[in-house]
Image (spheres, rainbow, N blue to C red):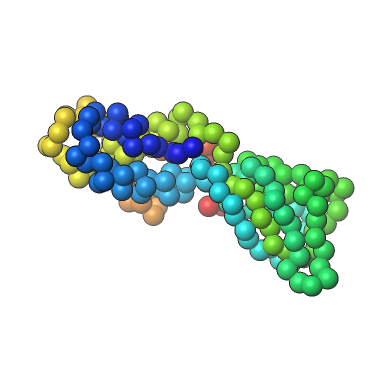
Length: 183
């Protein structure tokens, strides 16, 4: 499962030959972190992180959305470990609770799968449009004319990305955006 394939990007750009494949592949690889900055991991991956957890009832994973908990292990000898079958995971927020309502005692090493079970079509479309926008900035006047004058306008710089992310991409990602304070 890929956020955007070379074939999809070429279709978006109306490219039919292989002349630009290497350069276009670099663009495809570069947009993943940009998209994930707004919506969290897309392609599933294993994440391991430590949490102090001094008697808390809820652990908040740092890389939501989360698909599955793999392990909660103590970081110190003699510490408390937890059976993941006895835990409740809210994948969208990354909140982990004990099913019995108890508290976590840390420090803990948490291992889990972050990402999405599938890539929503809207997110794939946003990725296509972002590649198209970035491609246009590098390749203006070369190859087929890509429709849209103001379609790719960026009225406000996006923190951390300047004017690299057009408004239409942000609007498509809107329903999948991380909650404030999660990034």
